[in-house]
Image 1 (cartoon, rainbow, N blue to C red):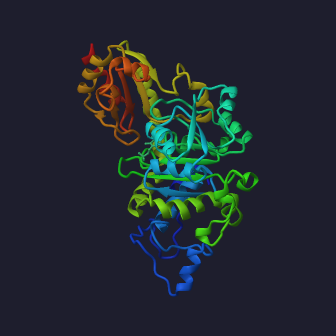
Image 2: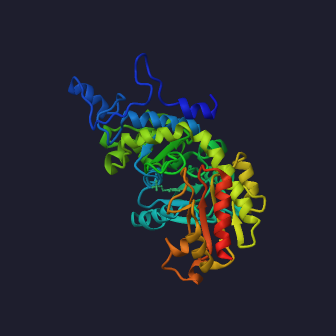
Image 3: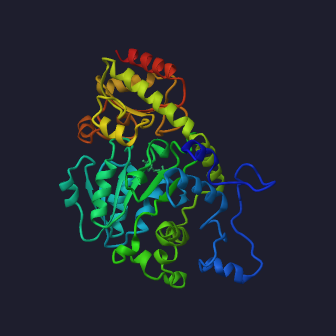
Length: 425
Ligand SMILES: *Cc1c(COP(=O)(O)O)cnc(C)c1O
């Protein structure tokens, strides 16, 4: 099946007389005839459901669809994108481990790795996504257990050279984990370029309507844990909390990672997505392949318009030929990137304030990637405690605006921008 068909059909096939849409199994628990039946589930001897903190059929149908879209062997849903990022790393890292991460990642993920995971004794080295192979090589240590990057970074819009990072991870016998939130599998499938694990904040384009916070983890099934058993004792030695199961032996390359993350991390941390939210997520997935091209069309039209205006000092959109990431974007995302554009007004903070106040259609929100267009000026909102000098040093000039182009008609978006730019003059 082609990707568009998978968006609509994968993950759930009703039997004769069964509901056409994925049923929302709004139940915390599941009933068994005998204790022995249930015991088999607790021993991971049989597959089935016993408690929604670990698994729920609604979630599993939706996760199976996302696995199919990314080309993976197994997937799980989490309560948020943050939970997906954390589980993807903590499933294979422990106190004393080390992570190599791209420095151009979502702020929440940077904080997770650089602050919270350090408190857990997990170290990290950040490298520029544009680093040379030698610089990347130098970031690895004896105790490195994972490489992490973002296909198309939020909000920097840098493009990860997935093949470069995958090759380095492979040389060091560790998996590459890629957050593929912005392009979605419609525009990029990192597994095809060598990523071993893919994560998502489904809150963004996958949901697409600003309805439900959620996350997902997909395993490509391509990393041979047993070949690196000394590094991954959690997957390759007996888990005494499950009667001595060795995940990599029992569930193989295709199933070990997600089974362990479900059986241990969901059990202990409980960051499950509610079945109701999984249902909403699936509604978004059913039209993902129809929506993404429109987000790209609007993003590119807006970026080109902004580039033509004298009030705009700079535009960043990897689909623009003038963008430093144009070539990488063409390679990894030939059908386009997404609807997020960032630009800097020549008039700095004052111009940004006037511009934001003049917008009529684009709403002021700290959100991206839904059907309605929104804008954010970090200097006067999320980063308002910083001076213009501090902002410039952080690469977020006071006149910078991040715009997430929704699904409206592009002529109306451009008209709104044009009248707001007039107000800045
Ligand atoms: C939003 C976002 C996250 C965090 O996801 P939440 O669902 O908000 O927890 C992680 N990565 C990227 C790229 C994001 O855009």
